[in-house]
Image (tube, rainbow, N blue to C red; front, side, top):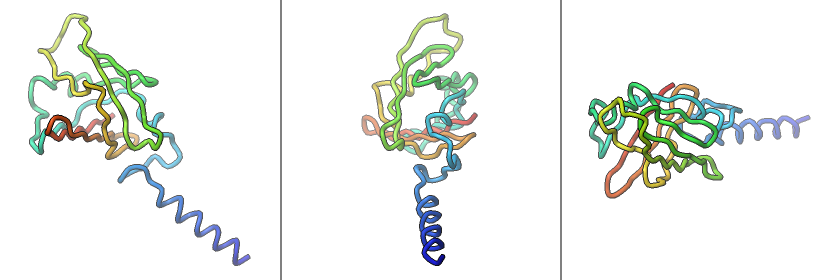
Length: 144
């Protein structure tokens, strides 16, 4: 009986210490399933400077992005694809523009160049990403 208790305790410790993201509240939900849906930009910082109020990211704040099953759609100007890595700690996102009659001023393509973003936080209402590209550090906070 004592052996069973020790094994049970070890199982619980391993289960609690295997979080993929610093603030993972998904428990048994797959990260891919948690990512699917519509996300709106809550904040973007470039080299530590908040750029959320700039006109060239307004579409992301107001309309958001929609993550489908490994496809991505920005309602006004971009579409593309995304893929989790094997460890599910990074996501590669690539988007490209298409013209459906732009509602917003030309928007910054945040997810260009097939970049691999580190997933900083993922739960049912928050999806945070970071990447360094061309000497600039980007930190993106999305919310449901």
